[in-house]
Image 1 (cartoon, rainbow, N blue to C red):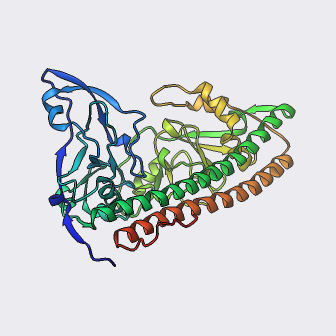
Image 2 (tube, rainbow, N blue to C red):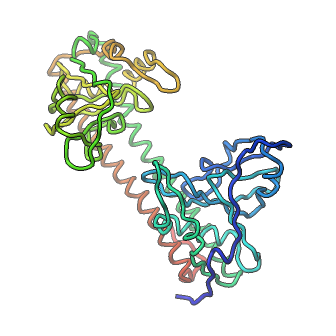
Image 3 (cartoon, rainbow, N blue to C red):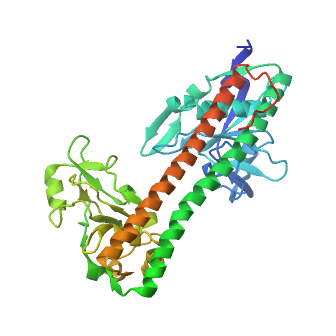
Length: 409
């Protein structure tokens, strides 16, 4: 490892807190960088910068300068830590940053290059170092800024910093190209199955009699009440967040005690072959099929669909574009789309013979298995590319980037 001097971030830079809109005139309209403008790759996405009327006095102290680094200090989520960083790369216009972010500005431009510092702070984020510097409150993460300022920044001579940035950018461009190809292949694999699925039900609709879901299934709504959850043991409660397209997975579901479970299971005890359906929110119309007899109960805004026809044939129909098109005509509510139990019963599905249903399911199962294998390959490729990026960053800041040539990814 090359021996470089280092300096704590708090000594190397000055910091500024984000902007509140304020209430005292005079006001000035400025673009405000928010958490939504941070990409996962550490880049500034300026497609939806919001423009606000802010106090001139506040803005004067918080105007962004070219080369400033903006850090997300509050926000995140259960699986997304805060600490993302982006470079402000604009030379024109009036821009500031929101109160959920802070600015990091290098004091001495002859000591550190802002691109180099950004790449190092990005490495701290993707390596998981900043996750240890966070507190949680009501679903929001907050960066412990005093801890963050203690980060030791390796400082090679400025020409070496520029060389490292150049090599990293070349490497990342190659990685981004490989990722784009893998993501397109992943999208193609998913669309292959979706297209075939759509074709199956379009064809069936032309040659087979249709019946309503209410005729070929029993539907049982969940209780419209909020239960009390327990931390340990108990029974899983499936809510809309647990219903994903595919096999039902209750491993991350909230739990309830036996008394609550019995109350919520009075109408129906689930069994293999039942379908669980989400009828509200972003996941409305999504369904999963039950493949085990593990006991669970339904939370609000979910429905049991119990087919009298082949369960998987019904499941595939509910996840087809034909079913989605029918649901979209029956949905109520713009901000929170909802489909009623009555509307679900009105969905119509072509009904071939039981033997044909099983043949269709067998063909769809086989194609889904193939496409899932392809998806797994491309997901693994994407994961490997992310690990490669971390590895290159680690070598860069350990002084181990000895070549300016980039290997093929």
